[in-house]
Image 1 (tube, rainbow, N blue to C red):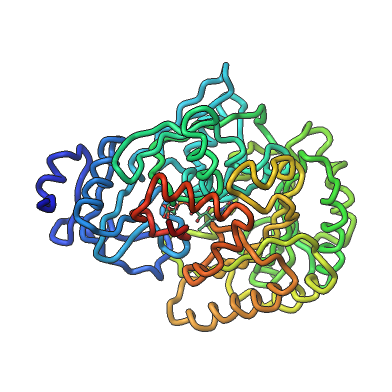
Image 2 (cartoon, protein in one colour):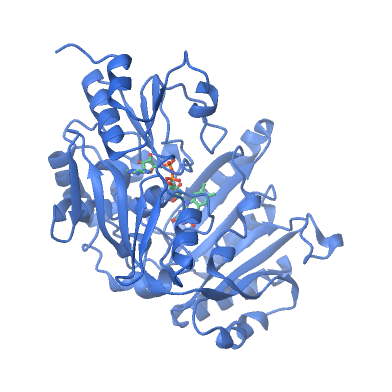
Length: 456
Ligand SMILES: Cc1cc2nc3c(=O)[nH]c(=O)nc-3n(C[C@H](O)[C@H](O)[C@H](O)COP(=O)(O)OP(=O)(O)OC[C@H]3O[C@@H](n4cnc5c(N)ncnc54)[C@H](O)[C@@H]3O)c2cc1C
């Protein structure tokens, strides 16, 4: 069979097809992590599900690697590929809300900013990421951890259905009743099974939260981390939030003399009745003197975009992660050893709690296997200057090496580095064999391999 030409691809696609010869190629090939510098042969800026199918068909028939891009946030740069095809869904960002059914349908390139803005109009929300520029699809297909996870479950637990273009170019609906094996696999299995052109979510009543960041002295970090460990074990589920190592940015609520110093921050989010917020946060507040804070009632989308400015597109990124069952004293000791050395204002370590509603779903009910983990820490190295790459990557690796023996073997695929491919079985534990089976059914030739890859 003769291979399709770029001209034929252009004939099928309503969006733009950009090759190295075209204007805009440099801009179009760029992803969020500036460390990634790949040169695709064609970037299909999809406008419709039909365009996505055309990109998939073209890659398969041309025997080229295919990368799928939604929000573009993949730290290992899975949204692009050398010498292959990129299906770029970042132009497909519509979000429609059905307030009566309490559902929202997001196109495959929507960001959490798009999503939260649309649902907030109706006083509704679901679990999403803590930065508004992250893609809904990439985050959800890998699991989806955020402020609301203890109350509403992971993002993937709120997925009702998804429209998926599979490796053979077909458009399928995956839900509990349609292609249930595919629906099982995409809730945690990432982009291994096809391209989600739309995702439908369950929503919950939530308009405003009570919360925001507090900054504690490094010398009080041990007390705050120990308090967090005890408190979060049975805190009301409407409480979300996490400790974070953070260099103080030059924000007006932080005393100017302390800008640039390192703190243990705590970002709190109380999604219950607003009038209870102050009392709920009081024990945390009382652990140690708070150096600076910006805590109070605010719209949920305001908290979900509050830290966007710390992580603009174009930084260098290197991240690593493990799940954690017990935040032991030994683990806290390692956090105290490495956290205060957080190298830049953009870098951070977050220790996300994933108990509460996340534990109500059985480990084998979705692909996301670690339902007994209580925490999902991420060591997120982010910095502007490429000349600092070696030193900053070393900080992430050393921190990881010190905490990994005190953690579970597997980690959250969305927080992992490109050099973590050999951990894929551990990430899925008992679900791995079933994921391979589903992969063999829907993508036997591994067209979708630019990801944390499940090999057929
Ligand atoms: C600044 C920042 C903040 C983050 N915060 C959080 C957080 O709060 N919670 C959390 O859980 N994770 C978070 N993450 C991790 C995030 O979930 C992953 O980086 C995720 O892959 C991003 O999805 P994306 O669509 O933006 O990325 P992309 O680079 O566009 O996509 C990454 C991969 O996801 C898959 N994918 C994306 N879109 C589709 C689609 N439409 N169909 C099929 N597959 C698709 C593909 O495999 C693709 O290679 C964060 C990442 C960053 C960089």
